[in-house]
Length: 83
Image (cartoon, rainbow, N blue to C red):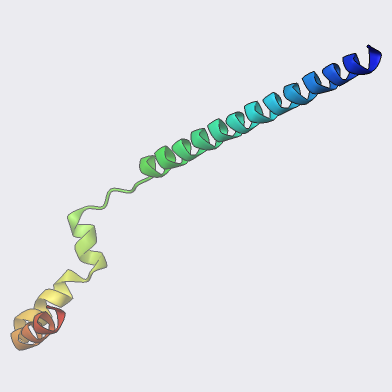
């Protein structure tokens, strides 16, 4: 009987270890999910709002606008090549 009981105990220990492993995996998945959600939320909260005037400045809108006014044929060429 001692050998059979030892096998039963070993079997229970193995099952317990497997359950812990499953629980640990679930815990890790939960932690990873939480971290990803926090990163997504963090990135969204850091999003910078840029005004139209800032965008125009970045794109040098005045220069582009003046160029287009002076050279409308160039704009047509660009549009034709693009589409």
